Image 1 (tube, rainbow, N blue to C red):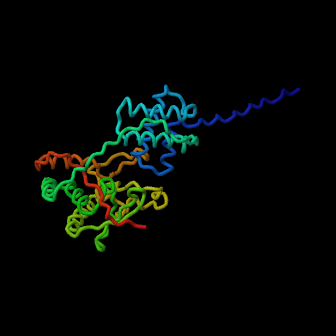
Image 2: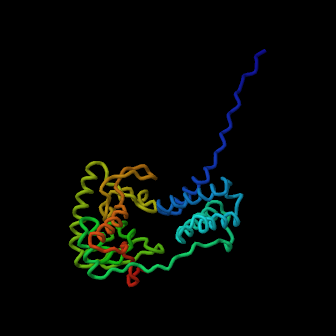
Image 3: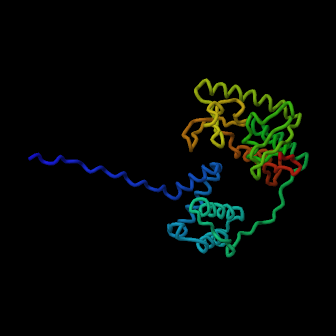
Amino acid sequence: MTPPRYTPTPLSPAPSREPKLLDQVAQRIRRKGYSLRTGRSYVGWIKRFILFHGKRHPRDMGKVEVEAFLTSLAVERDVAAATQNQALSAILFLYKEVLEMPLPWLDAVERAKKPARLPTVLGVAEVAAVLGQLQGTSALMCRLLYGKGMRLMECVRLRVKDVDFAMRSITVREGKGGKDRVTVLPDRLAEPLRLHLAAVKAQHDADLAAGFGSVWLPDALATKYPNAPRAWGWQWVLPARSFSTDPRSGERRRHHVDEKLLQRSLREAARAAGIVRPVSPPQVPRTTRRCS
């Protein structure tokens, strides 16, 4: 009698593990198209919220725990109103976008007081004195900010294609409120900016020859247009001096210049010009024309 043939029992596939909560947050932030800086900030605040409540899972917490955390920021840590609002935005994102558990109105939170401070307004002579102390990229950035009505991050994120010398205009993409707008390029800045872009173009050509020259693109445009990341029009107007590693893709490339460069340069220039008041990059004027 022939013994029955042994047939091994097929192994069942290993159950897929759900990503950790903070990984889910990071993935959702990327899908929503938030900036890398906002993503890091949100993940950091959510982590602090969980640690504040003894590593309890947010699904097991709610309105009371959120109010306790936000109140502690204002009362115990004495944070600024903007800092508390950032923490609130991160937690609301967690519950709405990741856990799909929208929170009711948080009416029992002790809100951090927002101080009523007047901005530092420099006179014409003071502005000229500060500009006279600046050189290179910092000087160009500062003249763009003062001369064309842009916020600091809007300035450092400019792309070459958004500068129109013929129309003497610059298009600001994804400004405040996610809107595009057009602002004027002053005649006195056209030639310095043209010379600056010529130097940037030479640097970009050298990067391409060395096997680099790619730039980060938003909204998966690099997938839709594979050649766009190396195209001249998409390059940063104000690129960084050195390469860095993209934390998302791991690719080595030039990012735009660090905005802290101008902030430091302005403080040093103001000190050299004998101005003792705090000086920061100018805010965008209300007369800036917006696109519909």
